[in-house]
Image 1 (cartoon, rainbow, N blue to C red):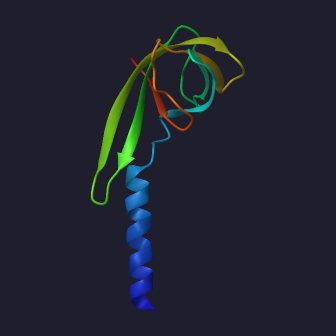
Image 2 (spheres, one colour):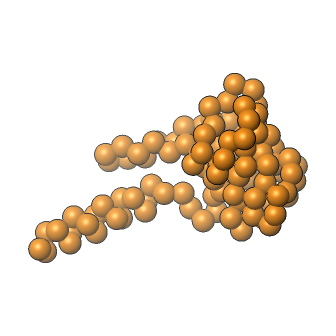
Length: 102
């Protein structure tokens, strides 16, 4: 029983280390080839901001980030959601991570 708890704790710690941070947003729905809805959580974001889009690949012992490109927040849908304009030929999908470029 003790070893099961250690295994669960280690697994939980590894998953938390690989997850996105509260300062990241995410793609919640791709609405066309060149547009998606993104949730920016409570990030200070506004229409016209440029964002970096990436995907995390979780391996057994490490996490690798794959850069997918940049996009522009085109329209505010409410206080947390925006429509994101994407470049042609992008590979963005639901769940990808979005972070504002300062």
